[in-house]
Amino acid sequence: MNAIDALDNQIIRFHGVTKHFGETYALRDLTFEVRKNDFLFITGPSGAGKSTLIKLLYMGERMSDGYAIIDGMNLARIGRRQIPQLRRKIGVIFQDFKLIANRTVFQNVALVMEVAGFKSRSVIRQRVEDLLELVGLPHQADAYPPTLSGGEKQRAAVARAMVGKPRIILADEPTASLDPDASERVLQLLRAAHARGATVLITTHDTRLLSRFDARVIYLESGRRVDGPAAAENVND
Amino acid sequence: MIDVCRRALSDFYRHRYLHGVCLFTIALSVFIISAFALFFINAGELMGAWQQGIRITAYLKPDVTKKQAAELATDIEQYAGVASVSYVSGKEGLAWLKEQLGAGSSLLSDLKENPLPDALEIHPAKNMAAMAGADRLAGKIAGFAEVSDVEYAREWMQRFYGIYNLFKVTAFVMAGLVFVAILFIVANTIRLILYSRREEIEITRIIGADEAFIKHPLYLEALMLGSFGGVAGLAMLYGAFFSLMPKLSPEGLLPFFQVRFLPLELVLAILISSMFVGWLGCYFSIRRFLRV
Ligand SMILES: Nc1ncnc2c1ncn2[C@@H]1O[C@H](COP(=O)(O)OP(=O)(O)OP(=O)(O)O)[C@@H](O)[C@H]1O
Ligand SMILES: [Mg+2]
Image 1 (tube, rainbow over the protein chains, first blue to last red):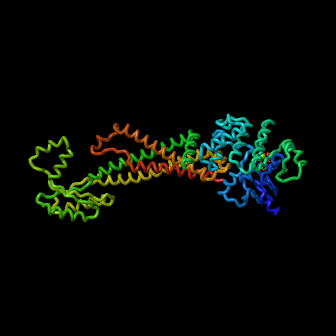
Image 2: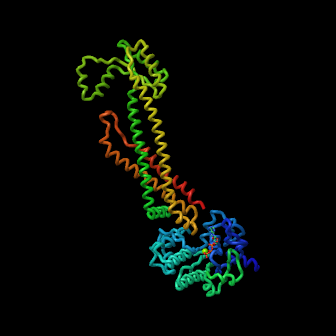
């Protein structure tokens, strides 16, 4: 009973996952699992493979070896046509934001809902405005991303990741370019999403951030999972 | 569907500069190709009008009866290279002449009696072989006892067919070449549009868009470019045609020939081709750029 319960509760399961780009190994033999509604950090120095891990999760890349299951979908077997289904379950905050430059903040966020099949303009408008309110960007709704500050882009990216009410939120270095106030604000947003039931996975190389949370941490180094903070600590950036 | 249209339109607006360039390219291409078509169709018709005049006229001796003439006509019709034979009485011939002369026909009204004999008009089949054989045919017809005289423009006829065939081949080859060139240019312009948008498309895909969500507006935009460009190109041609034609009218050259604009079917065919070219350009660019 217990084992089945545990399986039922797992939303992400990686087993022996390896990803290499030619000769470069970004991830090696990585095994871990994430339970529903977990709040989890993945940390490690630059080049450890954090962004690669995020990419595998939303299938921006296919893994080289091993298997992974996300919300019941086996990533090794998934067909091209099912990838969009998987991606709609996941909200991603990219390290480089990936906002569309020639669409306004509002349009960027609304696109997620259009993609998800929402037709009613008023429903979309309402939801997007709520989200922009939540991240504190309502005044920039009609601005284009290139004109925003780093922190504003970050918050726009957060709004886009959350607007579709995804079961999983992946945040790749969401506080990297932010001052402490702005970082705090973004983390609060992620915690709010967690409180509403989302599973949240955050990558960071900021060890101070980890110490402020009582959350599970996975340490990566050169693509391998390592045991403790000791390994990660001596590489402060 | 409404949704796809809405997104296509807003894409159009968002990328108005590139779309404008593409639209102009298509319009210009359609203009060039339909100007070609206009020229060739009118030149072809002009030749057709000349062709009507090609015939062998066999003048009959005065004592030949209508019945004998009809028998002779059926005989000649059996010959290879003959399309049709018609009987023209002297009276009909005179009436026709009067009509052709128009205002000058008063010249003829002084005539006491009809100087024109009855005749058979032999229209050769419209092909090279018939033309080449026209000489022999005329010789044979001259050999009939009922025939007093045979008249036809021999050298002109042969030369005409040479030119006509050359013209036809040239028209097809030119049209083919221009079409291929235009297909290439339009496809590349559309490719440019998609290329400039590949990042946007990639992001849309990453946030969960399926192929249909991405492709349908693109195809619709390409069809819109094709149809608007086609309409614009034809409108340009139409404008040019009606502003230039009065000055270029070949009235002096050929009184009974009227230069005409493209027939409606061809206009529609050009529009549909232009939409098709847009679609095709989109198809190839998508295959080229949007595979992951
Ligand atoms: N597309 C790619 N082609 C080749 N090598 C790649 C590619 N993506 C990542 N790598 C390599 O994989 C390794 C891990 O990169 P990754 O971006 O995952 O690191 P990271 O932990 O996110 O680093 P950072 O903290 O700087 O963001 C690096 O050595 C990188 O050079
Ligand atoms: Mg990274």
